[in-house]
Image 1 (cartoon, helix red, strand yellow):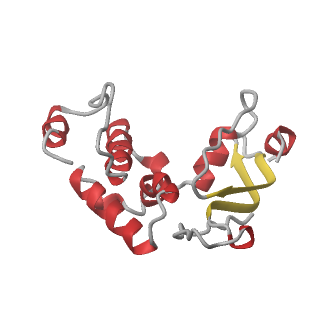
Image 2 (cartoon, one colour):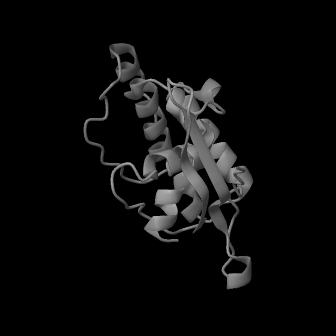
Image 3 (tube, one colour):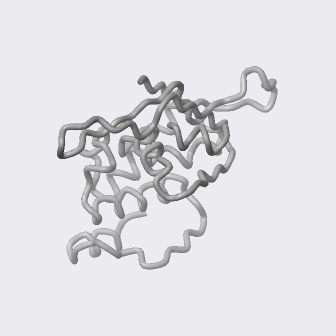
Length: 171
């Protein structure tokens, strides 16, 4: 994929996170995210439909780190919002590289969201959340990975006093 494809950027298909096997071949490579022929438009105040993404496709294998680069206004943020729309998908994203089964991923996501008080938001689009809720989802993503050490900077940014206290007891 090149940047001109993103700059030009119907139907989105997300492949579920799958566990990988050391004996698998490249033909059955596990895919963390796959979107084909993605189109996204917005309506202006004047009632005009403006295409933001047009016929954009993306495929990201599990266990890889990718950066989406391009000039301002080419559709990077919009593509990310379309491809990773739910709280569940956001928290599960980092788990794709850990060689977990679907059941293990669901369990970790559930426990992490419970720890930060966001279980009821599982299927909510991330872009509809407040700043504090987005911060709690980001923390849940880190907790789901179950790292031995987790270094965080400005952990409580956007959190109210009640949520700050709750975070001191999670994990």
